[in-house]
Length: 538
Image (tube, rainbow, N blue to C red; front, side, top):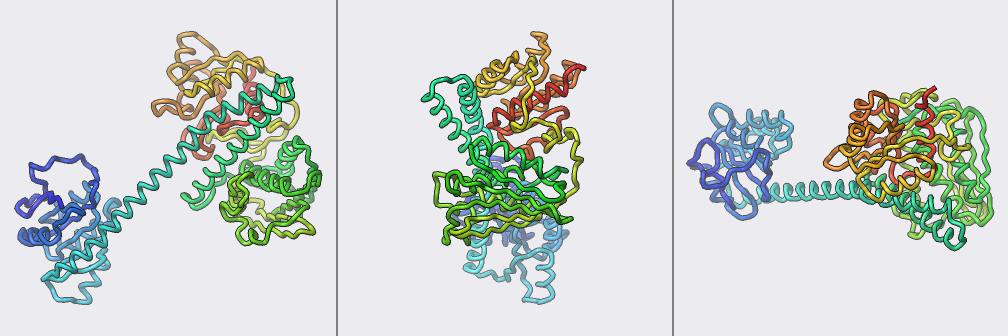
């Protein structure tokens, strides 16, 4: 035990021989605060508690105790009830009114014999326990040990939380940057490769990269669910048939027959990005677990006024009986070659976030069918044809848009400023865009981008920029600076290792789109063409 002050120091400050600490500093050891207006009581209490497991600070008045409480992180406050000017009850009331001290455990010390009404008053103002004078040493130490242990556990949980946030940051940015380079380079190489063996190798690289991207996204989703109590969604008005057509186009490229059936009204309000993720997971599972060449069916029933029902069915063997009770639990699947076992867990979370329900039926004779019931409107919706809002997130779907490979991509060329601090991402994007016929201006950070515009007098048609740039700079703020320098609303495509929900809500940006890393090459090129077309001179 390192006694930071003693009873001969009525101000409650540490002795001058002890180094001072910065405001808000937290000790490596838990800190116990003792408050009593009698110096001899403080000396006696310190003597009883002296050990190396925690620090002790003392105060001879309620006001001095408040200063210490606001300055230090306190594991336990042992407070004498009867003090002049501010008694223990008043101190406890003030502590409960301040966020920093609201949850500090308080043990009251009193010389009075146990009085039920007085004890209830203490509990009402926030006491967790009482000690009665004369104080029994063993009782005192046992009570203090309990709260010191709880504080240590709390600090350990905070450390785990910080490590978790660091882990999510690594997944969200550090791993996605090289993955973006791998996928972009593989896609470009495939477009020009002629040798069959080389094409097979490149296709394997692309498929493995896409699988890794899905795994990263699933782990991030799992972390968000566990930390935030569920997935956040952003509903907007949409047509379910158009959403399904995007998925149908993706699966037709795999050479698998997908039977589509639509019945009734397809309009509603959903988070389209999450619905695409839901359908992609369910259809991907159906394709993997059905016999080769067997069709997979997707039926949307919009006959009800308040909800739509989705049916995803495939033939083949049913779900093993050992997995059925835990099918929607994380890591339920034992087949790690196909993924982490998070897909159906995330599907259920997406459905629950929309206020819906999901169930399945399965046997070896008929295969497996998933049935999802989604409310048509789970929140205030945005117009179906609404343009990009101030939140910077790409709109869910617009009639006539050629997103996700639907329809032919126009060929509009322009001067594109690319800003990214990852050299591999910068090189791969430059190669991709140059191959597409664009002129590329490359910059590693915001200052370099500004120099290109100011010093080189460049006039880019749009900017592609990483959200997280060196030295804590964020891409949208750089875009605003570039717009001021160019005196026009320069279109921007923001690439981010985090989700659109996490980044876009912080820095609103008009006339922009946002894609997560690693961005699908076709979607990236489609978005570039859309931004160039929307901002082309009439």
